[in-house]
Image (cartoon, rainbow, N blue to C red; front, side, top):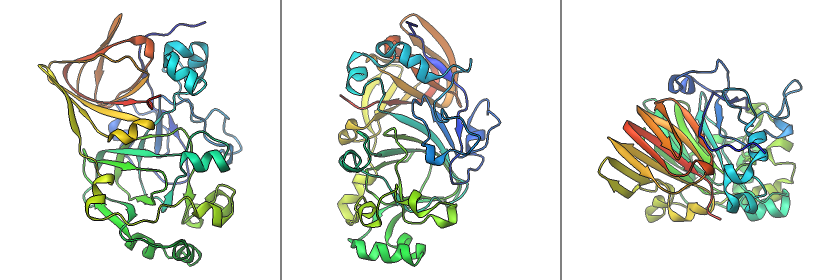
Length: 349
């Protein structure tokens, strides 16, 4: 058995999907991989579904590879307890329960939603649905996202909009947000959403690619792909069409909460407690030294500055534009220097 206890810096792991990317990932990355595509899957054990694979693509597309071209899937399979910890490894059968992506939108994404865990268990033979969390890293002036309906609508209305390809009606019925660096959105399964062009973000999500698309033909997709192979009636039951307005807007835009103030910096929790079933994330703002004393599998996205990452038994320099995957066996982490890092964590089990 291969014992791994040191964090690994991860290269660009770009994954080709159905929408266009821009230049955001290349701008962010210290060493862009020369790949195209709008999604960089970081510390991923998740494969792209066969329905999205091209004829000449490997079945392992989506699974992250190390700088030495080792498969992270193989490393975790060789030492699931060292990578995930006993509790997480047992709960999900050797899966982390987490997928982290750096997304870069070169065009507006289609209006779509994702199934809940209960829907996925009943209809898609999966223990995972697809609740998401977005952390905006950069946005061009005027960039927007659409999330949740402003008022209640019924499924017949949504179905009519889909049949008529009335995208303008869909978008006008949704909450529209101007976005800027540092914003956080909590996207519960079922919420209709779309991301406009010019947005670069870190996304935490359950490790699936399940999407029900209210627009699909303009993206070169089939009706079968848009509905996950289900009937429209069943697929549309995924959508949460309730209105989000007034006090409910805060459910979509959680405010970050200071969870640890240390002499050398501050740690902020970014998502509400209800997200912990799916994932959690904190922002470490280090001015000299910050310690995280809870061992865990984790994905790190270094967003600003430079410094050093230390763990039980070693240390490495880190800088903006790098991503790292941390095994449970690395133990406690500490950051030194002037550096800001997103620490993305798996679900509580």
